[in-house]
Amino acid sequence: MNKKHKIWQSHIPGAALAASVVNTKMKDRKTGKVETKGDIEFAIRFWKRAMKDSGKIIELKDRSHYRKKSDRRREQLANAKYMQWVSDKNNQ
Image (cartoon, rainbow, N blue to C red; front, side):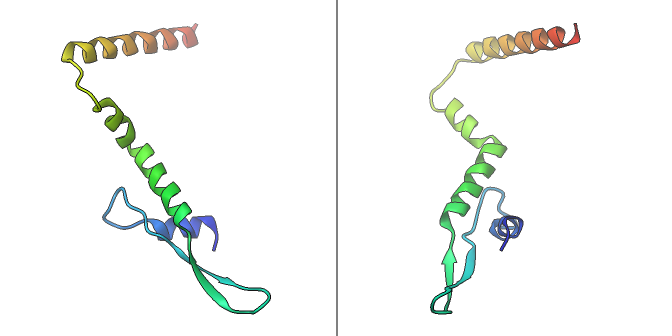
């Protein structure tokens, strides 16, 4: 099973941030028996990536303690100034 097929199978429809463990069939070379093996590490990596891409981890870190509205506004203004500086620097 290739990686794209694994990704496709680990996605759970209707659940945005969920991952299922994909069972893969492996044939033992010595005995010839077919074993099914669940790849939990792949499911965890897939779930972590989905959490990171959705921005949930950053939001949880931001909400770990209370921040005043004025502090949030000040930080937003500082970020806007920095982004403006970067875009001006690139346009020169």
